[in-house]
Structures are given as C-alpha cells and as structure tokens.
Image (tube, rainbow over all chains, first blue to last red; front, side):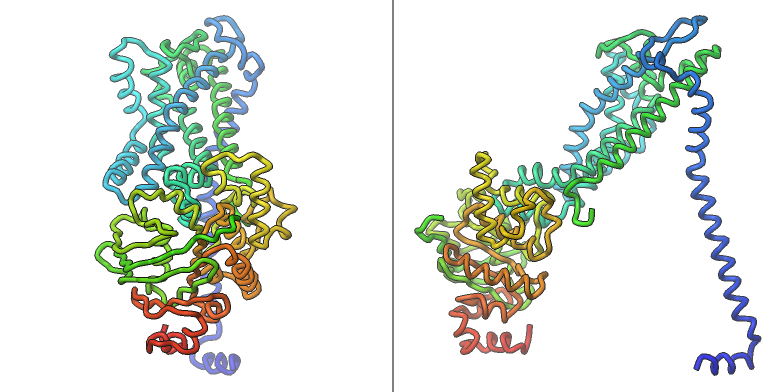
Length: 300
Length: 255
C-alpha cells in the first residue's frame, strides 16, 4: 500500500521533495542540538576557567603554613591565613546557629499552614529577602548591630550572614516538607500521635535529607559572602575568637590582599580564593550525598 | 490481649458537614465486637467520611462539624474533652494506600507503642513480634526487621500497616479500602487475616468490592448519598435486600 501511495504521489510531485524536507529537518535538529550543547558548555565554562586559573595561580602558595600560620607583615615572606580560616568557620557557625533554627522553623510553619494569610505574607517577604543584594544586608546589620555599640564584631557578621541564610533555608524547608505525602501524616495521626509530634517526627524526619541539603547549600552560599561582612565582621589581622571583636574571614582577607600592591599578598589571595572555592565545592558535594537517604524510597 | 472483648461502637443520629455541604445524614448504626462490618456504596456516598469520624480524623480539617453521638464502649467519641490520642490508640486505622514510614520494618511497628512511653528493648521486641505475627507477616520479615519498609511488596506493606495499627492493641480496627491497590492473592491474605483478627476486634471495612464485602463481613451497611440506606447481616442484605436502592446497587444497576 505504501509503495502504491508513493507511486501515485510521485506522479504529482518530485520524489526528492519529501526526502529533502527530511534532510532539512535533520539539519535543523542538528543545529539546535549543537546550539544547546554549546550553551550548556558555556554555562559551565566559567567554573572550569576559574578553577584552572586558581589552580595555576594559587596552588603554588598553598602549603601547610597557609592553614596554620598567621599573616606576616609586609616584606616578610611566607605566612598564612589561619586567622581568616578560623574566622570563616566561626562566622558560619554563628550564622548557622541563628539562621538554621529560624529558617527551618519558618519553613515548617509555611508548609503546615500553606493556605494561611500570615503564611502567604511571610512567603512573599521571604522571597523578597532572598533577592536582597547582600550589601544591603551588610548596611542593615551595620546600622543596627555595629553603630549602636560602636564596634565591629564577629557577632554582627554572623547575624548578617544569618539574615542571608534564613530565606533560603525557609523556602527549601517548605518545599521539602510539602513533598512529604499526606498519607504519612495520616498514618502517624491515626496511631495517636498529636499533630506537633507528627510534624516533628514523621514529617520533619522524612523531609530531613532535603532540609540538610538546603541548609548546606545555604552554608555554601554564605561561606563566600563578602559584602555583608565589610561593615560588620570588618576583618582582623590577628587571631581572634571573640564574639565582640572584629574577626577575619576568608573572603575579607582575599579582598584586602587582592587590592594590596604586594605580589606576595596577591599570591596568598589566589591561594585563599582556591581554598574558598574548594570549601564551597566540598559542601556542595556533601549536600549532594546527604540526599541519598537510607530509607528514602523503594527504588533507591 | 485482654479476654474481655470491648470495642462496641454505637452511632446515634450522626450527621456531618464539610463546611456548608452535608456529607452524612442522621446515621444510626451499631458495630458489634468480634464482627466485621462492611461499608459499601458508590464513591462519594460518605463511607470514608463515616469511617474517619469514628477515630476523629476530621479534627484537623477546618470547617467541619457534626451532630449526634458516636459511643465507644459508652464513651462519647465526639466529646471535646475526650483525649484524641487515647481514642486513636483504641481505634486503629489502615488506609487505602499502604503508607509505611520510610523507616525500618521494626521501627514502623514499634512506632505506636513508643508514643507515650519508652518501652524496654525486650518489651518492644515482643510487641513487634506479636503484632507482626497477628498480621501474618512475621515469617516473611523476621530476618530483615532492620531493613527499610519501603522494600516490601504492596501486600506486605499493607499488612505491615495493619501490624503497626495492631501494636497499639486497639479494640476497633478501621480499614479504608485496604485492598483496592492489591492483587487478588495479596487481597486474599488480608481477608484471611481479618477473619483471624475479628476474634478480638471490632472491624469496620470500607470496600468497593462487593464480592469482598460478601466474603469477609458479618454485617453490611449500604450508604448512598450520605444516608445509611440499609444495614443488616451480610447474607440477608445480599440475598434479600429490603430496599430497592440496595438491590439496584448490589445487582450492578448503578454505582
């Protein structure tokens, strides 16, 4: 039947016409595929470039001393960023201690009261806060935490970072909790579990891998933040673990070294940038693996 | 189990509303201990609404209200002063789709008993084993109690959910279309299990499967448009229904 039909069609139109249109379609498809592949490569190219650049520029200054030694005065060679590393760890700890409970709590509220008026207001404000430029958060923290006490402090820096973290954690927590099937809630309620314990044990427990991932992504994001720290943590050339004193942080140290006129400091800044990137990479990887829960789903 | 069989449910003039929409109209029905009552009727006729009223699963839905009484061994289930936690421990529930927690088989069954107290390890072991045995699942899972419940088959998951409910030692067991997602063999397992369980429980089962209702239940209640049309011994309801609508439904003329 097909041959008969094509035979009949060939009397009216050239037999090559349909074949050419197939060829044109294949060509168009190939072009589009190529374009999207190029776009995909371009999207990841910056990271590869940055990594290559940091490795060539920074790896040579990266040694044990970088992690353990304090910064040396100008002119002296060597030295490291031990204080900045400790500062970053401390700032992340403060921010997480303040931001995670608030963010996760707010996310739980939004998920469990999805229709409520307050919930929709909070959700909207959270999205606005999420899009807020980080420098604005820095100014805000300076106005309310630094200016009244006339002192830069680790605490102010940590709070500024927590403010950056909260909306991110809130929204991911909400999304993850919403993914928990209602059937699980009902199962716990039907066993006599009160609502709050159902939320806490079943719902939160089931959503936990996702929430952990969200928290780690938020940590990775604030780890490299510089702007909110400029007028809050401020930076410190010395070792400090005091909450009420200015404290150094990797991004701040990189910033001040990078704009300095000294080659040795430039090299350290490159190394610092490499460490910062590695830190963010590691956190992202951990976040990726944290989602693979033991009892996640049947097809795990 | 205690040998004094309790779990008598008496429903008196019970009506229920979802917001402005009335879902149940003046239901009066007795559910006797050691029997299985099947609730049948077309979709949306109020069977599940009725079932969920008995352990107050509607509590969390805003805008619902009810009138009438539901008595469990003489206690008014609907009284605001009633402890819902205690009620739901006395009235277990199994849902249409098996819903094990994403935890181990053991932890699923131990979940209920761990609510109010922290039983010792040996005590929990015993409760878990007993519940799994009663749910006819023990032999299949005894060697992998620590594995995820999500790895069980659909029928096993549903029996696990029954075991989980049984671990609370309830007097009443509510089942909301427990076999609708199961194959015939798994369904048969559950039905045989219900026969065993009714020795110490009041069982209420919602089903769309009339053959199932006929096979498994002692009493059958036919719901239609929120009303209890007819209620009686299963054999009588299926062979000599009093109501025209009942006959029309069970002979497949509508529904």
